[in-house]
Length: 610
Image (tube, rainbow, N blue to C red; front, side):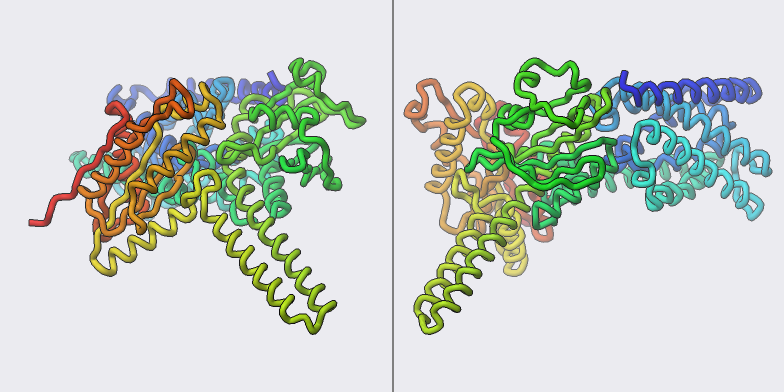
């Protein structure tokens, strides 16, 4: 077990012992508890608000947990409320892969800690509430209840923050970066909702409470769905976008150096380490561009080395993350490539920055102490890197564009100074600048492999077509097309043949579509098709032609055993419908086509108005 886990385990053991003893005393004095049905309902309420909370990579999540905590404290005795909360706390980490960071060891540690912490929180807050004359159960509200209620809420928050601070401090994290004032105050907003739940529960007619519980559940579900939709809008990696919000927050840095500084700051929040590397893969020169290297708080100069060098070269060549818990006992294939330096390194964590199937670079954290990093850290850093890779791709494109423009402008200046009277030459250079800028602009909107529109162009064109259809009362259809079993094609025949298949699919779509239709590569093996002035039936016909053409294609010229089919979902836009909703609806039909056997088109044509 890692050193920091041992410290946390001792802390959790002490906390479990103390809170368990206090809980036993409280239960002995309390008497009977609620019925099994009520207990199950309360536990389910806790699990609901946690599972639908907002991801916060540094601290786990932000949720409405104060609602059931305050509610149960005002309905039951503190011991009973603590048992219900502790039971839910033990269960939750084992049902949430994101929260347990891909490790059941972390799940057990977090589950025990949260159960003991919540027991201590509720016993402290409930005891103080009763000592100040708070009524239990709370059946009505008067001015005399305000002071006990305020004390209850503040003690819950204070004990929660204190114990989390100790837990993360023992984990080696910077508590000041994690527990910001905004996070510290976020839970207080939901405390009144817990008071209202207790007041409604105390009424003889439980119908209002049932309606309130249903409305609260609907609010949690809706808020979670909205956060997913807004978080998904700019991320082309649809399959894991909900777990990459920390990396997505890095987008907007238009230079790689600025992005590296932001990424370093995020890693300081999440991890403790001696050294940080941000390395770019310059495949044209076959070099590793070590763009940012910080050792013990000191920035070291950028430098380059051969792309196959050391562990960095191994990670880029294999496209896999690497965890070395003790540098004295690394994997043999890493030991053979290791570069021995004066600076001692015992713990190593390296994660590739992969975008569109290619490793653009890597992030590495290193430390002189063994056991600094564990599997849970690898999971967290991989999620951060998944989003950061998108930002890196943008930053490199912006950087190349800016650098190219700067170089051309410098050439123009030098020519102008040297040849003041050579107006024709100056005009030629200016035209070259404009032409290259337009070409680079086009490249930022075009998928380099297939030549169709990329995700950014698709998003803009879909919004444009929706506004046009809304303004003129026109029709619009959207199709999402996904190659069946494409991963098997890549695994069996190689990525080069997979790229050839993608190009052939794009060419087939061009042949079957109109000039006004927009064909885009949505991500990986998934394409999107915007069909202006098309209703559901005609869009279905177009997609059937594409599907049939691909099914009938003689793929043996690429490989004798190759067969390629697609699954398609089609939707027709309705007046007032948002782009995100249209995409979600179409994607749902695509998955229906996959689930119903693949190689088919699923569409539900809109009914004509009566």
